Image (cartoon, rainbow, N blue to C red):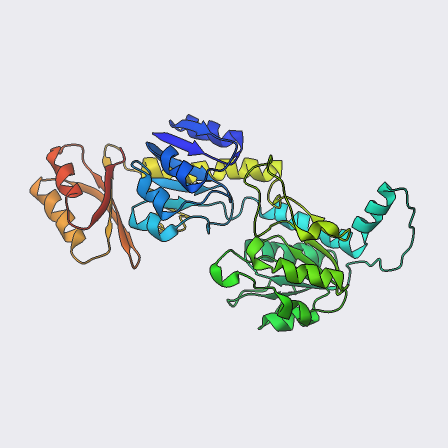
Length: 398
């Protein structure tokens, strides 16, 4: 089976998939919809990061695609529902780069509170500006975390350990770690925070979550960070509040429009401000994180292809299976309608097949069945299982 890895995914991911028996092509850049629709022919495994869009057209253009691996946290660049309807499982890396993002956020908070970016810029032009005016410790300050998922919650713990008072806002009720306090509205968090740090996902409802209205709710002299998604923040509103001095300093790692490759020019109105730290979407881009991701995601992809395990899939029912010696394993993905399991079992009974193990998981749209059967079976069995009405995908795993 062929695997295609895009966007300069770490070389060890290629090695890991090759060691698992796959033929791997690694490209250093993203592909647009048309390019990917052509390139995906014959590909069973697709690996991407944040820039490649796996659209319905791409999925429909694929003739062998079994699964997609997002070598990052977010999966909003993937049409998850269309993948599911076509029997394509999607996996991501929800934990592997968490520490890297958190460390960058903490470092930037401290740098901005101490006005180091401006001092650095002046010193590079020969201006010696040694003063404590406007330079503050983060200790005892209020940190407001918007989004209390894997990154937000770990940031909460580390921030508290260096003396910050932590508040957070999330759409769901979350268990507060340490002494963190959950705010029950975004406004309440913004009004109390000396530092606001964004850690939400890329769902459409989060687009322009922070705009002029939200900036008006913040304290004068607030420090603002966005290391989540580019569309979460209204860049024009952020620019206006930096110009007015309401925002003491900002750090932005993600942008509404980002270059697809390092060779492309980057432009933003935020480039004019010496009190803004700009980074090219590298929150999770440390060597440690990329190596971890390059081990985690290929393992999930290989286990799905070879064993049918869907644990940690973001669009399939999660199923983790024991292995059976001396058996064949079959996978049957179908629309979740009544009677499919009965039809499967009737076909097995007709062929006098001994079932060693049968595992079923469903959600509102699909059913996912793993069958472990003895090795004595007629090849026509496979054709009959594949021809069951409402079958999305059927294949022999081993």
